[in-house]
Every structure is written in structure tokens, then in C-alpha cells.
Image 1 (tube, rainbow, N blue to C red):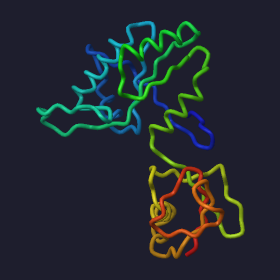
Image 2: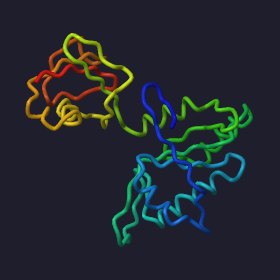
Image 3: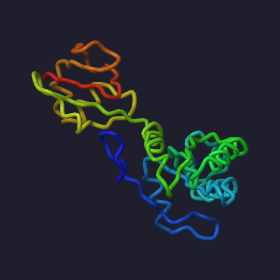
Image 4: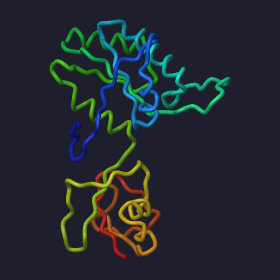
Length: 208
């Protein structure tokens, strides 16, 4: 589990993927994950490794978001949010090599450097995972009380107040009269209706 501000990400480290062998259970695991992170070694042909990995995944009908899907695919594809993590960016010289990798690879996927050795890029990596996940954190409070800022509700980006109410309890959607919200895009305590689009970090006070 990796902490990012006030939430946690579960990171699953899988065996390597190559043309010679893929563990049978891995295809199902990757298809069910929220984000597919492809890790390549900066010092071991990262471009070739990335291309090979994407080819093997395509054989499993797994494609990163935005990829071209073969027209002759006989079964439905699995489209996954994805990013590329380039490991062993451990020094200033390695940072230059990482920039060269980006230029030569012409990646269409989000890409971040990483250093398992010294962890120097870990905060940036977790921030990128949060960005790619396309989620927001919304807090709730009872009237006259403070919110618990350590226990947000996690919702897809562009979620409405109605979606939040349904996540709290199915009856809230029917009983909800209105809510007040505190956040960056509104004035404090602004009254909102069910179709209001929430923002990351909003604090919502529901009235039923």
C-alpha cells in the first residue's frame, strides 16, 4: 500500500511479461486493475522492452487507453488506463538518458521516471497515478460539525452530488433535498442541487 496525501493506492508487483512466457493468471489480473503500469529498465533497452510488452498485452486483448484497436480482433478488447514507469533513473546522468528515451520513444502514454534505489521520484509517481486514475476526493460533514479530512469518498472525476449521495447510502438519492459545499470552485457554504459537479477536495454537507 502506498500513501498519497489522504488516500492509499494498492500497488501489485507482478512477474515480468515477455514473449516467452506469461503466467496464466496475469491476464485476468491486468484486465481487472484500475491502472496498468508498465515498468521498464532505463539501462536495458527500454524502448524494445516497452514495445515487446505492448505486443504481448495486445495478444491478450489488453490495450492502453487511446491505442488503436486491430479491426480483425475477434473478441472484445480490454481498454485500460495506463502509464509507463522508467526505473533506474538514479543520477543526473540517468535523468539525461530518460529525456533521450522520451524523445526517441515518442510516447503517447503518460510516463514518469523512477528510482527503486533512492525513491527520489516516488511523490511524483504517486501524483501521476492519482492523475491517471481520474478520481476526486470528496469529504462529508454533518451540519454544525467539522469534516473528517482523513476519510474522503473516492469518486470518478466529473461526479455529481447525486453520485456522492448514492455512494453514501442508496436512500440518500431519494431523500436528498439539497446540500452545501465548501471548495475551490464555490463560495463557502454554497447551496447546490443533485446535478452539481463536484471537485477534488470539496466538503459537502448533505440535507435530507
